[in-house]
Image 1 (tube, rainbow, N blue to C red):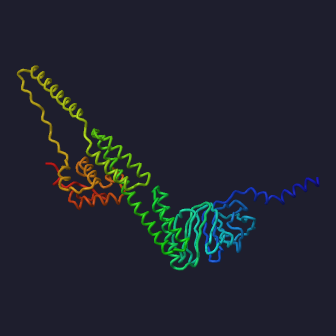
Image 2: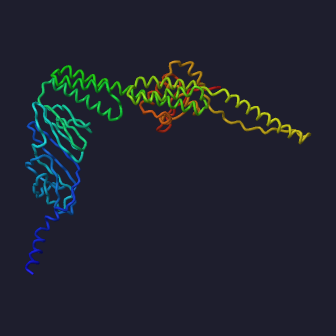
Image 3: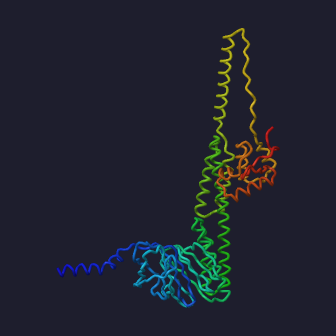
Length: 428
């Protein structure tokens, strides 16, 4: 009997520890690191907690924790116990917990170069000390900016590394800033699928020059790297638009039965797409222009015209035969053919007249005018964008060109723009 009572008492005493061991993990909400010039880091970690739990374990960042304070969602401090890699918090009734503390375990220094390393479960904001210049990043940042005069970087979750230098001379700091700016831009465009081989090589040259102490040359190389990247992105956008127009021209020719010479256009279009994938954007653009021109000059096979003529003659003969049968069936009757009511003639656009007067029109301008001609001489700007898969800014510039050329006019219908071919280019 005494042994049974002892077992019961031990179970009651050890119950809180068992409950704590069985608790669910908290859910991270936000994480911010503020780095100081001496390498210390202030950490503010906010998590979601189950208010029904008496205690929860919160994992902390770093290897040492000083001036640790845990507060609930109303700002009240909570009792806690530090462990090897975190803290156990008496959290009953709290829906959110915020841990604030300082640690020196997240930064290391080698010569003038500081490194900040951390593994995070959620996107985090890293605020750098005054006068710090970013040297390298492990990931493309989600955001860059300044707060309170200090530079910050918002990084995605995962194993993060950020390298920075404090107190550089102006020329050195400017070179490092130029390298960081070029790197962020290039990596962002590469992540979007743009091939930037030349810009990437120039950036690596800038980084090498910086390591050699040639800061002015490094800055110039970094600026050239970004310029090359921006130029390549612009050409890539233009090439993409040209390929879209060429694909539309090929599809139009096929739907109209103009298949003679169309295989050459399709081969050129495929070549343009391949060049684009390889990053040869200028060549891709020129090849796409050639593909569109071949598609626009493709012709219907001659047998198609002959077949159409035979069908028309057969229809005329059949109609004449039926008419004669009716006349013979009623020899004395006067047959009065019914008169169809007059219908409003659709607007027909004289494309030949437009192209003859405006010889400098771009290929994409002509394709849009052909689309307007097929649409009865008018279409909404939104329909043009959707038809040719154009960005809003590209479509706007194209329409502006046609307005300036005196070919179309723009009318506001509610919140939309109706683009209409001028009457002087309507067929009589």
